[in-house]
Image (cartoon, rainbow, N blue to C red; front, side):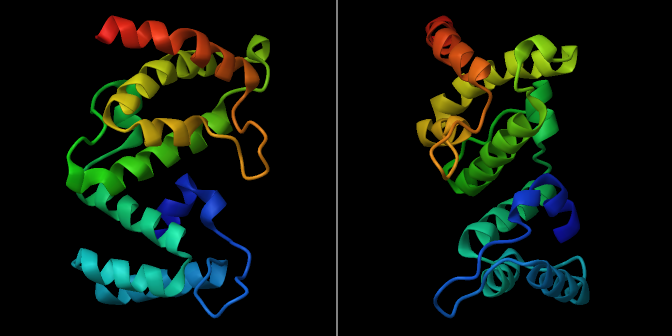
Length: 180
């Protein structure tokens, strides 16, 4: 389970060690979590997964991993959302799923959108086009999650390509007006 999660969120493999005595994410921590979960078998309660994850990983990574497990168990899939086959989770009790999917969406955009639109493949252009509609849908549920997708990185620099951010600024108001 942990390995599949890290394929989607490789940026969660490691975090800088904290200055205080608390769990932090590292390959060793992920291995420990994976080994413990394997020893429990397939029927690990959500509360146990949360306890184990928060005991071995940073709080942010543990929370995201817990949401990932829920997505797997309840058949939420970013691919299905991207293809329009499934909606964003809307219920208040699914908020952690929404955050996880929004973060995975951001990671996918960062990875797959080219720095220069002129050099993008048809797939990259299609993703950029579909992403704008998905951002509008996401903003209708949670403006905070939509902002998380397009937010700058930790250093304050744009994480997503500038051409895409310009198109979002230009097209999203029109897309929102159409949906109203």
